[in-house]
Image (cartoon, rainbow, N blue to C red; front, side):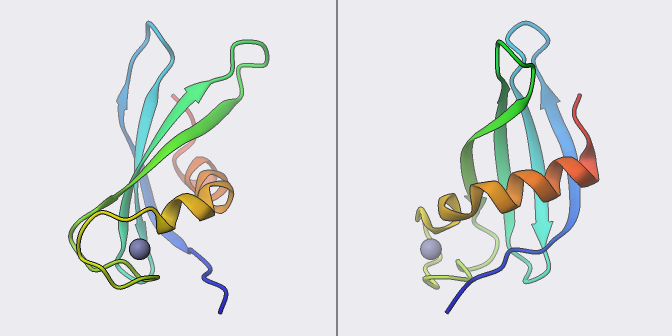
Amino acid sequence: MAYQPQVVDAKIVSHNQKNGLFEIVVNLKDRTSCRLIFEKEAASGEPVLTHVNRLLKEPCPICRKDFLCNCMSSYKDELAAQAIQMAGTP
Ligand SMILES: [Zn+2]
């Protein structure tokens, strides 16, 4: 069973000019919400997703827990690509 995250909404919610860290909150089609924390790679300036925190509005779509789990961290690449495509970078 392959989970396929599908971002339907993404927006930049914070940006630290000093260290380049920024956060995007995404809503997925299955009603999951996640806060994605990015940092900019020093050399290239490319954003790198470092943390995925699922917001606890809905049970996890993968393990069905309604408390913290790490399932969404397995989908960093998909989440980061879709989030940045939709919200851009600060
Ligand atoms: Zn989970």
